[in-house]
Image: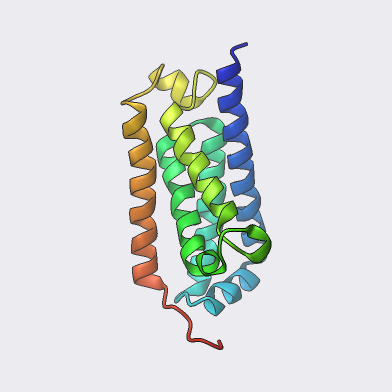
Amino acid sequence: MDGTELARVMLRTVVGTTMIAHGVKHGRSLEGTAGWFESIGFAQSRAQARASAVVEVGAGAAMIAGAGTPLAGSAVVATMAVAARTVHAANGFFITSEGYEYVLNLATASVVISALGSGRWSVDGLVWGKGRGSGVRRAALAAGLGLAAASVQLAVFWRRPLPGR
């Protein structure tokens, strides 16, 4: 057993499981999630809650399987970038103060997984072998597409809540 292959599986599994857990939590409490999204400034909060649940579960499952890994990584980056901008950035770094530490780590891990490739023990490994494109290109796809998607979602659906609300 190759240690690098095992490390890829472990990292994909931890990130993917975390995303699935968040998606399931959002899906089980759609009304509460919608209310929370509305409270932080999102329009169409029910649709946002449903989309959040679907994207998080789907990206997590794809990440665990190593299927379309740079695209799964971009979905994680997008989700974490939206969370960082709307909730965490104003609170500093540390998660103990609701800072961006946690979301930064999940997004970065997803870009790293994309750069390394999902490995031999993955759907991508079975389909593509050693991987398509360079690690730099896969990382750029995950980060760039994720940040672009987050920017579009924020521009279309989010309005910063007024102070005191």
